[in-house]
Length: 275
Length: 152
Image (cartoon, rainbow over all chains, first blue to last red):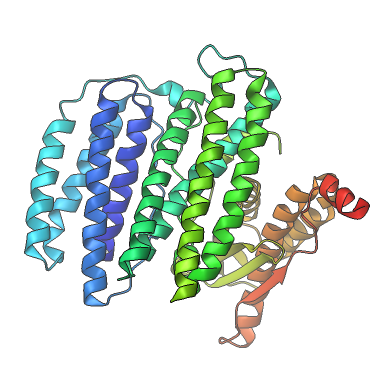
């Protein structure tokens, strides 16, 4: 089951990041399919927790550097076929029925997606459309995108693990909002990375990042990290403001969104304290 | 850290990243200031001067740590332990050429490698010897923040 779980995790990331490299309507379809695969991941995870089995998010690196999108589509179809072949390992026949149906449909739809040249997503040119960036702004943006794309992936998995292993409806509502927020940020940053020619899948997580004992401390640290991220966004908005008003506005927007994440974590802390 | 083409390549595709299930040794470098850490796994060929056959790392840290981990593990792969010790010493000896933030990350990786080498050596004498962890000595607070703190 752990192998099946890992392969779904890897297929989800492969599909999501192929969506980032697409510049056509295929992007939306790949986003939808990656959502479905993430849902499959949570189904299998739920099966693990129901059976009281331990599991991990320790996955192999997912290579995505290709010149044409058809190479990734072929790779994703192969991944989905491998998942299909292992579904009987999951004891819940309702889950496997639903997954089989989704996988069959996705495979047939993926094979119909048009060809696209995607080499610019990996050329490391670090140019962004017609926007002229100074070399300092390019460096700041590059480092920010690498740091934050990993961070958003980490947050998705941390809150997902916490949600899967908690029966507390109040906390789970907060975890789900934070997961959704991180998905939005990951997609924004992933698209920017592809545009800059530096697209890559974040590294896998160390187990102790998501398997922690002290939720209260985790949330306190999380608030400090969000404050740090706000500061980074502000610095970045200042660094790129002379080059692009659009970028400056975007990072101010992201900065302000962090306030909501902090408020949610404070709400969770308050709730834990009352309990 | 400035993002030149070589560093971007290591950020996009870090070498030797990931957990090694059947490792002969594991060592840890930690930064108690911010909770960051690096784990280095080794697969070792037994000789009088043992050889690093396989090496991998995992990290809770920033991009600088990942780049340092990628570069140092790439360099160490295939080395005899004596050469790897020299690599650790040389790396630690050049920390003052980096910014404090970058130096702390590089030191953490070098110490993780040293910890893994030392753990292996100790385990040849006692197979139950626990994993060794070393803490960084570099203060990773940017200079201007330190200066502000002193002024206050």
